[in-house]
Image (cartoon, rainbow over all chains, first blue to last red):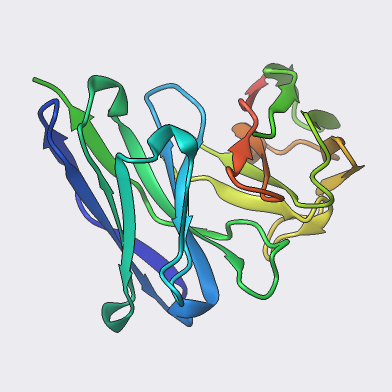
Length: 122
Length: 107
């Protein structure tokens, strides 16, 4: 079945970096965008950016430009999101989500990973 | 950036009620408007994509409609498992943006 499996919870100090992985299986990895979305405690959903696995092209939200890097390794069908210069307000659950497909741009994000909790605390 | 305004922010309703949630966008999103359900401690799940298309496996009591800048999610007859938070989302242009969420509670 189609699924996204994320790496485990992280605890980081302010100023550090975190790298979260998202392993895809059950579909053709290069046919679908991979997005990264976060949710701070008790808050709504915030899009950080996405990667096109086929080309490696990235689109980042302006808020995270210069602080986030999204990459992928097609040989292991895994996407990665690195966030640097962490602050306490980066404490959140970070989700990867598949979608849309590169040929059906009107699709939503139909498969989500379970989330990775990142806690930033001194 | 396209701003998304959902209303209401919270809603109390009873099992069997018909419920409508509204999402207004700050500029047109064509039909690139999606709806998600999220339960506590879980990842969001896709309900509706492209304004009105029901995602596979989603019960037919959920429906979406709208055009331009005004969209709605309707639940025709609330079931106990429908009490959750709902988000609209536009994927017409980046940055992809979400509404602030509508918390649906049991009356």
